[in-house]
Length: 152
Image (cartoon, rainbow, N blue to C red; front, side, top):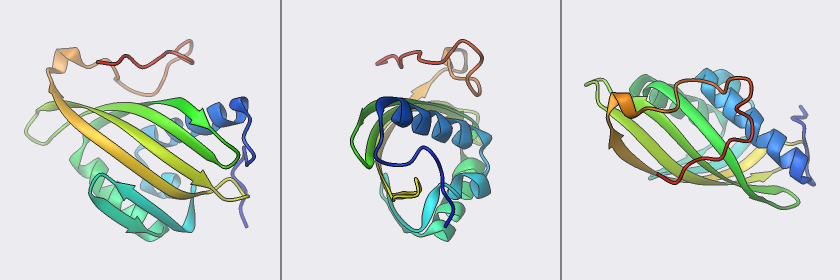
């Protein structure tokens, strides 16, 4: 069984490292890489989509990143417990018609003993923005660690 450190039970440092690892992986927009963080039978709710298993997750992510162009994400630790982490996030993207969006959301994560996510529940809202209002343009640069996400 593969291990994805940090593993439960989480400390604050471990939870922050897990959140940052997820942010870094999602910013690659590589469905194969991202899907490896989930158990083979992982269960997801993403908006109005309900998924089970790595294969469905991989297909979902591939379609997402074909649709959400120039995707760039920031995640922020909200709370943690022994095997659970709550995250808030924002990401920005543009659609095929050139409209720009900022998506705000919250995620609830549950992990197995090997550090793989076995459950993910995400609630997300999309807000149209102007291209010049984008503030998330790619992966974090040096010195951006710990920067809080603005509320608007």
